Each structure stands twice: as structure tokens, then as C-alpha cells.
Image (cartoon, rainbow, N blue to C red; front, side, top):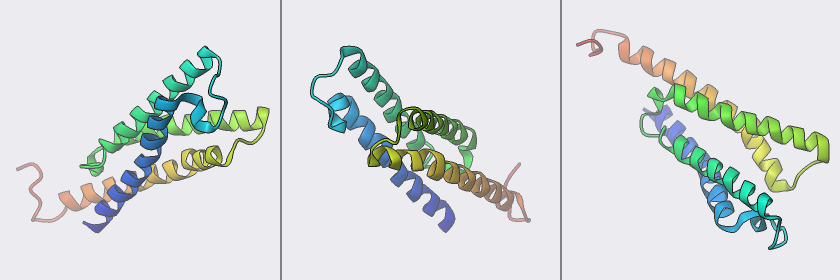
Amino acid sequence: MIEKRLLQIVVAIACLVPLSVGGESILRGPSFLGHPPVVPTDLDSHFRYISGIFFAVGIAFATCIPAIETKGPRFRLLGALVVCGGLARIGSLLSVGPPSTGHLFGLAMELGVVPLLMLWQAGFARRYLAASTAGPASTVGR
């Protein structure tokens, strides 16, 4: 099915963001963002911890790709985590001002792309289920 393959490809491409940025942030810490090489230890620790979670979310989204039509609950949970992060980023924007371009890109992913992917996955899963249970050719329940 073409739609399934297209959805899988788009999700795989989107997974590259948390995997690459999260991985690089784990390895380099806040210096990845151009900050001084030495930052307070607690800030470095917290930054790398959050980066580890970001990386793990990318892995978890990637596990949805093979049978994406059956992964609705997992996909929605992961999406909700990302949207919550985006809402937290809005809090930062309102309290301390706009972040760098890279973080604005992240905000667009968190509050734009991910919710659209959640809607696409849910719609596709409904259509896939309806098609697989319709008609005499169905093998569901046999």
C-alpha cells in the first residue's frame, strides 16, 4: 500500500531529528549548541539526561515504523510527550524570548509536524483496519 510506505518514510525521516540531535547532544553536551566548553556540572548533567530521553523517543518512534498501522497507542503516547515538550518550549519563549533557529525548527516539529503525523497515523490505521475487515476476501477471525 502506497500510503503506508509513504507514512513509514516520513516517520523515518522525522526520527532522524531526535536520533541525530539527541545523540550529538549526549556526546557533546551543551557545547553542541555553541555554548562555552565549560558549563555548570548540573546544567551539563541535566542537558545530557534530557538529550538521552530525546534520543530514546526517536528510537521508540522508529519501532512504530514496521507495522505502523497497529502502533496507534504507542505513537500517540510518544507524540503526546513531544507535544508536551513543545509546550514547555513555548513557556521558555514567553519568559526569556525566542530561541535560536534550530530550536524554532524543533518547536515547529513538536507543535506542527508531530501532531500532523499523529493524525495521519490514526486516519491511516482506521482505513487499514476497515479495508482488512471488509468484503468476503477478509481473513479476519478465521
